Figure 1 (tube, rainbow, N blue to C red):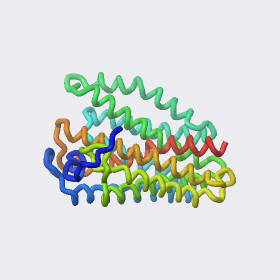
Figure 2: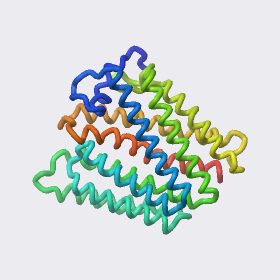
Figure 3: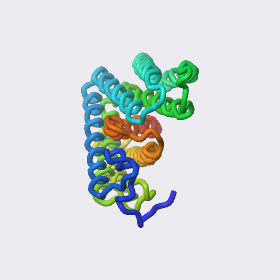
Figure 4: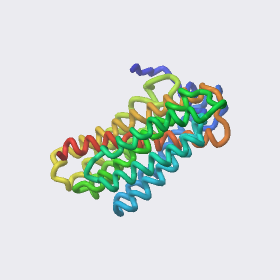
Amino acid sequence: MTVDSSATPAESVGEDAAAGAPAGRQPSAAAAGTLQIQLAVLTALTGGVLAAGSYLGVVPLLVAVGLVQLLLTVSWLFGTAVPGRRGGLVLAVLAAGGADAATVHWPHSGYSPVLGVLGLAVPLLFAHQLSRGVVRTRVVESLADITVLLVALVALAGLLVLRRQGNGDILTPAVLGAITAGLVAAHFTDAVYPAPRFDPAVARGLPAVVVGVLAGALVGLLGLRRVIEFTGGRGAFVGAAIAAVACLLSIGAAFSGVRASALPPAPVGAAVRLRPVAAVLMTMALSTPAAYVLVNALAG
C-alpha cells in the first residue's frame, strides 16, 4: 500500500459520486469534506442506537441489531444496484433472522451457530442465481455482492453473543463506543485534512487512521476500566485495535465505492443517497467479529 501526498481533494471521483455529484465529474474539496461529515453523522447515529440497545438489555439490543440489519440490506442491495435484488432480499432476511435466532438460543457457543447459517446460505446463493432465468446477467457481481451482504448481516449477531457473556453489559457498549469514536474521528479528520492519501482517487488520508486509533484507545481505556481483565492499559489496547480495524475497513469501503461508481449502470437518484449509508453500516458490521475476537482473547 502506497501513500500519495500529492493528491488533491478534487481527484476523489468515487467519493463525489457517493455524495451525489454526476459520474465522471471532478469533486471539490468542499464536496469531499461534506461527504465525510455525512459519514461521521451516520456512524454516530448507528453506533448510538446499538450502544443504547446494549445498555438497556439483550432484547433492546436484538431490536437495534435487527433495525441495522434491515437498513444495511436495503441500502446495500439498492444503493449498489445489485443484480437479482429481490432474491437477495429474501436471502438477507433469512440469514439475518437465522443468525439472530441462533445466537440468542445458543449464546454460549460464540459464532459457531452463525457458521451453520452461512453453510446453509451457500447452496441457496447458487440456487438464487439459477432461478434468475433468462435475465441472469452479471452473475459473478451479483453472487459476490450478496455474499458480502450475508456475511455482514450474520457478523452483527456477534453483538448479541458478546452481550450475554460475563460483563457483557460493559464490554458491548465499550466495543461499540471504540468503533464509533474511531470512525467518527477519522471521518472528521479526513473532512479537514485528507492527506497524505492512500490513493489519489479516494479522499482518505493516513492522519485520519492515526486519530481514529487514538480515539478508540481513549474510549477503550475509559469504557473498560471497571473490568479487571482490561486494567493496566489493556482496555486502551483493545479500543485502539478495534478502531484500527474499523478505520481500515472504512477505507476499503471507500475504494469499493470508487469501483462501483466506475462501473455501469451509473448511480442515479436514491442509489446515490443510499451508498454512504451502506458504506457506514457495512463497516460497522464487519468490524464486529474482530472486536469479539480481541475482547475474548484478552478476557480469556
